[in-house]
Length: 221
Image (cartoon, rainbow, N blue to C red; front, side):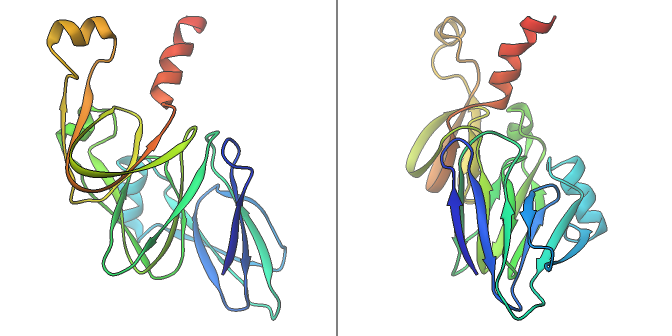
C-alpha cells in the first residue's frame, strides 16, 4: 500500500493507492472519494458489542468500512476527517499500542486490532469519556487532529490542557488537577489540566473542540 497525506496541515487528506489484493479499514464516513472498482464492505467495528461500546462510550462510529482491491491494477482511495486539521500515522510494531481520544481515529491496515478499554474517572472528568479506543497488533494507523498536530516524548511529568490530548501510549498515567494554586488557577482562566507521568509518546492538537464550543456559545444564546 502506498499513501500520501496532502493539503497539510489545515485540510489534510490521505491519498491511498491499493495494489491488487490489498485492503484498508476506515471509520464510517471517512471516505472522500474512491475508484468505482474498489470493493466496499461495512461491518460492526470489532463485532456487535464492541461496536456499541465504540459508539456510545468511545465517541466513534458504530460501523467501519473495509475497502478492498479485487482487480489486477492499482486503485485509489481518499480518506479525510470532519475536523479542520492535520493527519498523521503511527506504525504499530513489536507490541506497540496506542490509545485515541474520541474522534481522532481515521483508519488502519489489516493486522491492527481495535478495542475499547476503561479510561477511568479522570478521563471522564476531563471530558474525554469513560472509555478509550485502544489499537494494537501489527500495522499502520491513521489519525487526525483539530488544528496542528505535535508528537511529544514524555519522560517524567508533563501538563496538558484538557481537550488537546488526542493520542497516547497506554503505559502513561494521567491525573486531573489544577495548573497552580486554587486562586492562581482560577484567575489564569486555565481551569483543570491533565498531569501525565511516565515514559512514552503523546500526540497533541493545537486547537480544542470544547474551546471552540465555549467561544461560540455566547454568540448564539
